[in-house]
Image 1: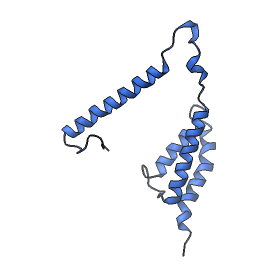
Image 2: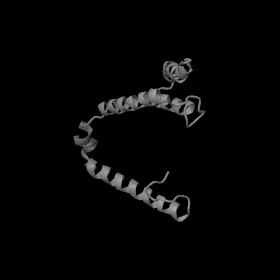
Image 3: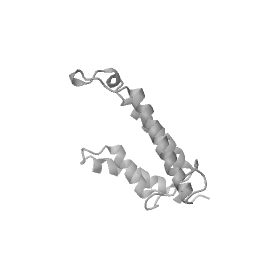
Image 4: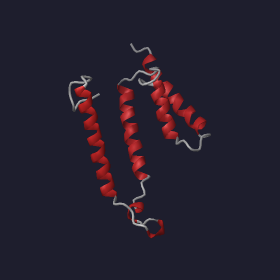
Length: 129
C-alpha cells in the first residue's frame, strides 16, 4: 500500500515552482526560467539531493525540456539573419559561423579527451565523462 511519501518530491517541486518566480521577478536581468533551472539544480542530484528522481519526475522533466525548447524556438527572430547590419556593414554568414563554431567545439573536445586518455584519467576517447 502506498504511503503517500512518494509524492513528497513532486509536492516540493510544485511548491518551489510557485514560490521561485515571484522571488526572482525582483531581478529584472535574470530570466525566470534560468532561476528555476538553478533552483532545480540546487535541490536535485547536483546540489543538496533533497529531491530523488523517480519515473514520474523523469517523465515530467522530459516534457518540461521539450516545452522549454519549443518556447525557445518561438523566440528566435529569423529576420535578423537576413537583415543587413546597421550602418550598411556586411554581416557574417550565419551558416559559416555555426559550422565554424561546431567544428571548433568538436575539435577542442577531441583534443581534451585525447589528453585525458594520455594521462590515464579515462579509457575511451569517445565516452569521456
